[in-house]
Image 1 (cartoon, rainbow, N blue to C red):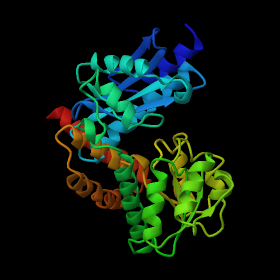
Image 2: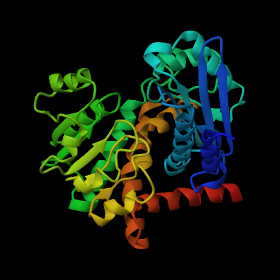
Image 3: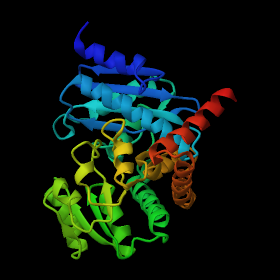
Length: 360
């Protein structure tokens, strides 16, 4: 047995991060599709989570990412009050080089073969137009365009939910649910980040941004000339006077190198799996940095795509996403009551809901 298989099987069956119900390895040689679909839990209902299209360095890295992301979706959906479990899919490859209609159709057939146990949507590297193609082969597809019966871009409500979590963080730490006069650093101003900047500027915050794509930064600064630009994420997290850090790119933003030099008093962003490894949440707490759990505050998007399955209504979705403010405050209160970091408090609340569903 190879080391790759050992690592995946250890995570799936023997680690505390395991417990997944099903992992499907998908391949269609004709189109070049290589994908992983991970279903963590269906205790609350069909697993729901997006499809990430990314040039992973190895197949093992892809599988581990699917395992981590799907587990996070179980917790996210539970705390968002949805009747869905957690799942996630990853397609291996550079979407700019290998994404084709044939590949997406093949992927749709793979999802359809699960008979509704997994409902897919957009994620990094996939877009509304892609879901329209996938939906041609799979009715368990959300995040489609309005022309095809969908809700469109879910990043709008994702950003809105993060903003609500940030407001709750400000309320908890400073006694006022506003970012007015606060300096907020946003790392990653792509699909979600640029909407978040709009909310922050509208609320009167001082905003600093960075992104590996110059065109993404330019789109923000062209619209909001007052927004400052940091050279990179390392410079951003060291910004003097930074009040809030919002990681809005890929996961693992909070690790042993970044936490010790982070100048912000609050971390609240859209990226999934921000904690690079267990224990980082304790390091943040020891430094007096308030962490708003990522899967709590970035749930606006999944609230939107879940609603699409029942006939999309934007106002209904926005009302649900607004409740992220109250959920975040409740997590901070539970953390204080139990003497644990907010990430652990969020996990406890989510795990209780899933356990109650299994007993029911």
